[in-house]
Length: 189
Image (cartoon, rainbow, N blue to C red; front, side, top):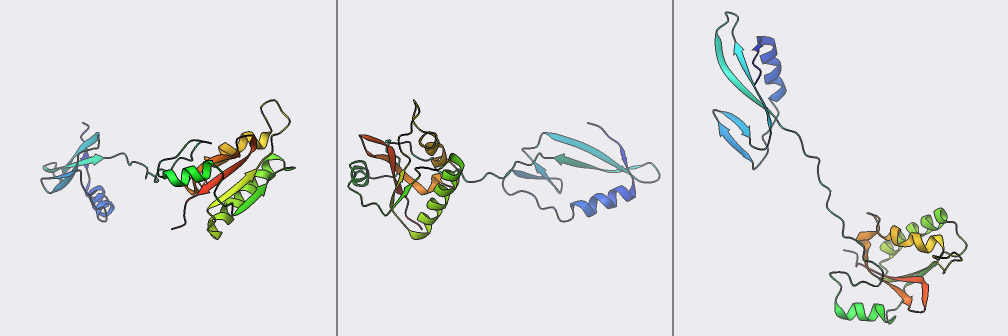
């Protein structure tokens, strides 16, 4: 630990600096009138000396690395055809068998990927505002070996932080047609 002399002007500046600092709740222990932080690893002790060179007291300063605030972890979007937690048997059966009434349908045929994403994003926001429960997104099969680019990108869009919390279940609208997805949306609270 490094020790150095702290002048009166530095001591006054330090007091002014820590005047409005409140200790963290939890993880603390009072030690000699100072609040001691248990999680910090860096500590330095500063000796205050008067102008005559006498030691007038020790002040322990603990520097704590601040943890970034954690955002609430969004619910992961379910994968296509996989039942998500929180989805009851009846709803899952109705969704996977195509027995749920579709409130709205978005057809992305003829769009380039960026325009399709913008349309999809607007559609999902509108779905939330309107309170729709089941929607269908038609991408088409595409002409490539692995299908069209919009069809390949749609599952990635469903995992975005602003879209994933809205989606409760995802299935193909028909087993023979892999070019359309039916989405069961969470109820608006």
